[in-house]
Length: 568
Image (cartoon, rainbow, N blue to C red):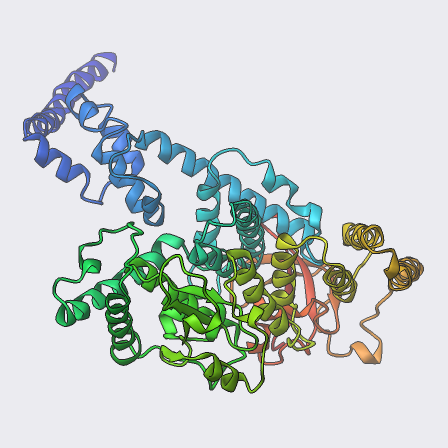
């Protein structure tokens, strides 16, 4: 028997050698291919990162082709996370293998934090100290944000709970970054006149989940400038604006040449591209967001004026913003350089009204009242942004009672970032926090936030003692009342008012739509979550909406969810 075993083994070895020979021959043929062909094969998209790692360990030639800073690992990174490529310059040296590892680690960390939010805050609002873990993350923030976007873009209605918290975290991260950028921007000297940049910060803060960047908006405006130049070439082929290069800020001094630019602008904007003032839906926040103005080709006087101003300055026409009451305008100087000028030495341009040029009398006729000369003066960037945010603040106050007052909260944040000592707005912010619900067992930090705001108001304006005292007393009474209400709530399925509750605590269930297994550990006769959660989870699309029993369930992956009963 032993001899037979030896013979069998002797027969197997040659067989393995015969099988290995073609593989070795195939590898030999592969590495003998030209480098460009090999690189093309490795970048074809059919190989995963693990495959590339294994390929690079076979021989020196393939290892050199798969070097960490080479095209192969760059392609792996691009295919896996295409939206991140815009953050890299073609001229930069990048260790793509290391970037891949860091991004992969950031993705795992992001999913871990989103999962932890599901466990900690599934039945309450995320408190202001709930984001402390995120603030201490290591690695590039853009990688973490990109993973959150990937979660939000998961197909269909999968992982709704994860999407809900990914959205909250992304909202918080981006708003904090934008607000810091805006505060730094506001520290620029008064002669720093990047009106568009400031307007984009406001746009970004109010729309943190949208992909909005100054570079993209500037690129869209540059394409409009090219169309204006094409039209201008037909008016005056030797116009000096046609020789301007991108990024130049030269100004043309001759009035006739400036007039030719404005004529070309009016034709392109209002006749060719069909931009117009939005008279039909004037009180819509979209009219104030520059990316929406460019997409929808409509806006209100201030947003249309900023677009008009930006294009004109790029083409050498030194227009200036005028904070005219009820209707934002631009002014165009007609006087001689160095001369003493008054309001009658300017033509006023109504970008909302298709670039119409107005006299002082016509400006007064536009708003139906006489105004002082001071209101025809030019304003700086901060005043322009104050006007934009003030408009958003007014619109935020119009939000219905069933909303989360997100626009009002955002506009208050922006206004107080510019003017932190505005007593009336601080009072409004305190009332808003109070109105949105201060529950000591859930969001005690909001209580402290309100009390901090009220203390700051008292320091700024002792005359507000009555209003501050009332709010402080009302807040503390509310806290004590909620403490007294805290207790164990006993709910019986046998009670008549709970007759629609079909399933008991302790039952092991399987979700009909999503297929996960879970155990019930609590229930409510109707959905007890806030309006924001109901809206984000699309509860209204369910057959019975939020007017049906909802169950607290512990899912097999360790997450806690709040699931509708549906049809029993």
